[in-house]
Length: 84
Image 1: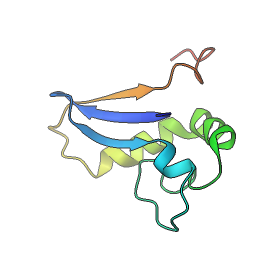
Image 2: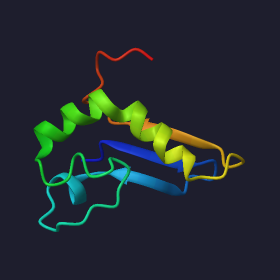
Image 3: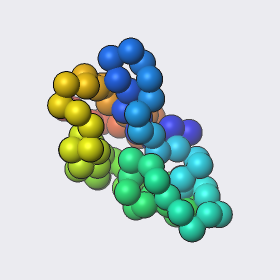
């Protein structure tokens, strides 16, 4: 399950946090969550993502040229009550 994903204007995926992170056996994490969801399981990763997605996106944007237009996609199943 994708929890958070950032895409450029053309639809190219620039960053994502999904099952490769929260269900990983590897000690390395290089996704948008900055390691906070790494190997902690889906339930905990959903809670982390709900609480921290905005911070992760702001940090992620720092590493991208300001000229690159991006969109953020949040998994609707964990943001049913979120208003932003």
